[in-house]
Image 1 (tube, rainbow, N blue to C red):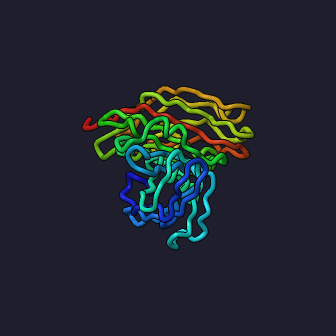
Image 2 (image 1 turned 60 degrees about the vertical axis):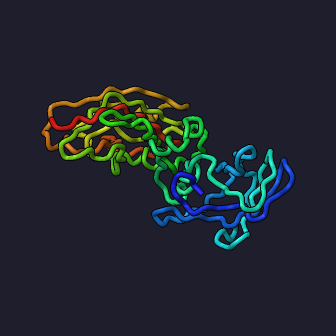
Length: 282
């Protein structure tokens, strides 16, 4: 169903002649991606697109009944439609696969990623900003649409678990750039997305070359950025690169890390936007 993945198509099996609140039965309630991953895409958070030409429309299901998604004609989807839709019409993702990826990640933990291919297929900032992330902070979101050549902008949403485990398990934000390359971090914006409670414990926060905190890639931020707020907070950090061994900088990924100890008890997530340049062949 995610329209940019080459996934097996889903169609309307039993359509409807009216408009407004209507239900259709889908041929199946699952699809298989090109890498073999099986996805169950129908959800009340996931917009779908149906029809073609003048009857093409995107709607968000109000209810989904799909207990046996692999059984033919057993999945019923209800939504409010402007047009009638007949058997045989394709049912595709209304978010170019984004919401389906978020929902799939929610079953496993991890992140959904959008890149230039998603944007070229039709994905927009409006769709991205309307994406429905779990409120418990279990899914991250990585926006790599603006990365091009040596310059890049990456936006990552860390899960609540990743935010807290920054000392024991720092999170990789930018993968190692290659044996002759280094990341030149220009600036970073952090948003502490407050949910219901501030964090406790923890230590000084930074972006680092590698998993430790001995080689910072940015200026540091006090633990109070997470432990004191009662609402969402934003801070901007400058990039940093002091004198270090070349072997400690070249081909090193950029990590979100903190010194001293993990954070505990807090809710919410963290958004990180990194503006960077890849320096190659020094």
